[in-house]
Length: 225
Image (cartoon, rainbow, N blue to C red; front, side, top):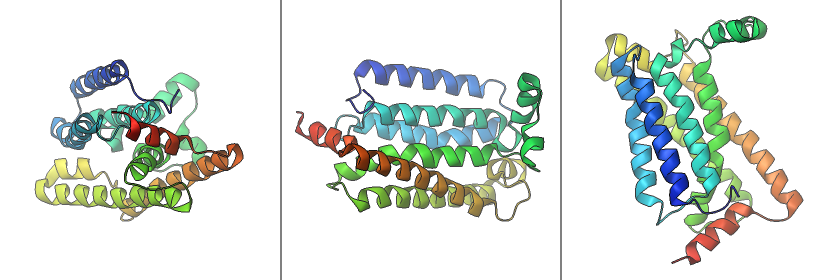
C-alpha cells in the first residue's frame, strides 16, 4: 500500500492538512519573522512536489513521510527550534523530565528534526534516484545518504547566510545554535546517522525479501501514461 501510486484524494488530504498545520503554527508564533523564514523552504518543497507529482511521481509512502516531517517542522516553526517546550510537556504528561533522564543541557528539538530528516527522506531520495535511471544495488543506498549529507550542508549554509543578513534576534532565533560552536556539524552528523540507520534497515529488508519495492514502483510509474 505504501509503495502504491498516490491518489489525488491522498495528495489533497495531505496538502489540506499541511495548510491547516502551517496556519495553526503561525497563529501566536513566538517569533513571527522567524516563522516566516522557517516556512520559505516548506513553500519551495510543496511547490516542487505539486509541480512534479505527474512527471516524477513518488510513492504514497514517500509523500506521507514528507508530510509527517513537515508537520513536525511546523512545531519548531511555531516555537522556534530552541524553545520548543518538549521537556515541560514530558513533565506534565509523564511526570518525568526528558532532559534530566538523558542529561541534556540544551533544548534538543533541533537534533530530533535532523534525525527524522535522515530517517525519513532516504525513501523519497531513493525513488528520485531510480527516476534518474539508477538501478538497485550499492549506489541506490549510498546516493540517498550522500543527498541527506549534501542537503543538510546546504541548509546549514542557508541558516548561516540568513543569520548574517538579518542579524539581531531574528538571526539568532533562526540559527538556533544555543551557544554551541559545533551546532551545524552535529546537526549534519545526526542527519547522516539517521540516513545510515534507515538505509541499513532498508537494505536488510530488501536482501531478506529478495526484491526492491521502490525500484518496482518507479519502473511501473514510468510505464504509466
